[in-house]
Length: 254
Figure (cartoon, rainbow, N blue to C red):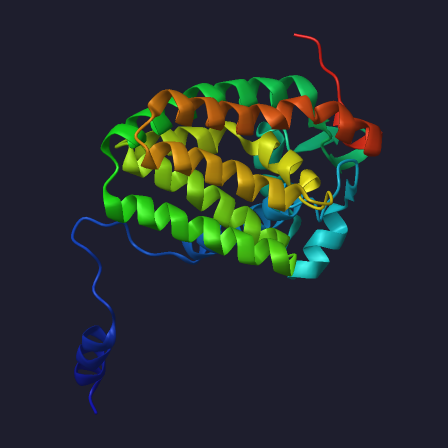
């Protein structure tokens, strides 16, 4: 095969670039890999912190993380910086990096904000939810009941979120649930601490059932009252869980 024929064959096999796209380079490929590695580390650490498998105050050692993933320190540091911005880790000069303790002030504010937003959703959902949407909510509660009986805390937590998300959707406010997800990071950590409490999951099922009962009767005032009582219970119980795990929480004055 001549040199011209070889060149022609290589051009046919090579994936064409998008018009006006910059030329590929090894450096760009390395940067993309580092970005992907950083995202994987970030998500894994974030999940561990929120699920409380990485407990508040636990050290995060860069060297151990790099060895676990087989990557350089750069993507690990990028992931840790992102977590620090979310107040999920504390980077202490000359001491190290640690899983942040749960700030009580942020926790209380998030519960207040979430309660106000969910009241809007449940009132609207009570007025406009279709029969199939109400049936979907009843099915979620039944799933919660089964998960509570099996003691499956993580799946129960997911079903709990699905219940509240479905109410927002039924009310025509799915975007409000997206807003709630952004402000409830510390609440999620706290909720993972509460679920193992004996009878906790059963009480949540009962409270959700009371909300749905009012929705099915199209009683918006009662549905809102039941939802507020359900969510405010988290705030009332903060002191109890602080006593159980005093090292997991921190007070901050604003």
